[in-house]
Length: 277
DNA sequence: TCCTTATGTACAA
DNA sequence: TGTACCTAAGGAC
Figure 1 (cartoon, rainbow, N blue to C red):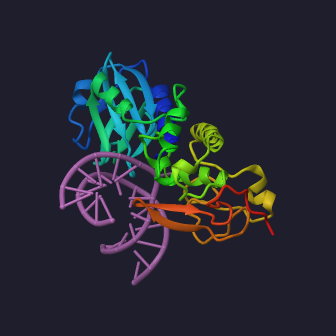
Figure 2: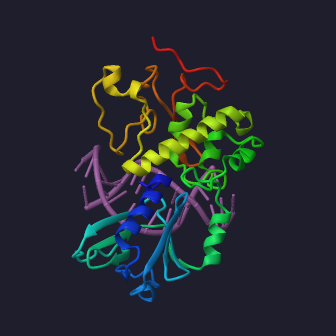
Figure 3: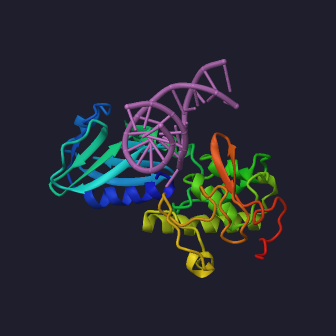
């Protein structure tokens, strides 16, 4: 479930269970060959930027983790069970263990290499140092669609396919609108919303975007069961009725990903939301 | 048991 | 734009 909120939550959880203590570091799968170099070292800091997770050992040894599409992390209480052969990285101490499976990246890097990762990422709504104007400076001069720009980690770091679809719905923005046609006030509102939604995502470890007035209870609909955890307006709701106006949710491929939107609530021009009924 | 799909990214052509 | 990479769950048979 890796969008930025997941990674920030993982940074917190790794710190809770392992920071300030020595860990036994292994790679049961064998692919993370640097593991033995870290056993007995103290985890001194954890950090997230967008979808990148950094675990610092000693003074300046970092494990750089990127979950990609399939990566998963599992925490558990000691004693750790025998690892399966897909565990890329296991940290263990007398109280806890944590297993990493299927990441795109799991590598030992230096301070300079870590800085290079930061340098190629845009502002992250979940980081206090984030500057939304830096993102807007790119958006306002681009003919690329806002849907593609929101997924570009050089523009905004941490937004993935779910937050993209949901934040555009919440601001009535057609996903195919060129970035240059997004107004400053629209961007301010989108950014503020991303900050709020993603913070809530870290807190709850899931993505919820439906406003109280549109929940199934408020709308007199049966409660939904959602296979990805949260309550959303459009993500993976292809051909289902929009929670707000009832129009069938539409889907299309865009840059090798599935895009979801409501063609009524998200108008190409900057009109308001659709009226129900 | 096989096939599809997934909240991602990088690189080749 | 297509393909490769990594894993696991769910659905079709």
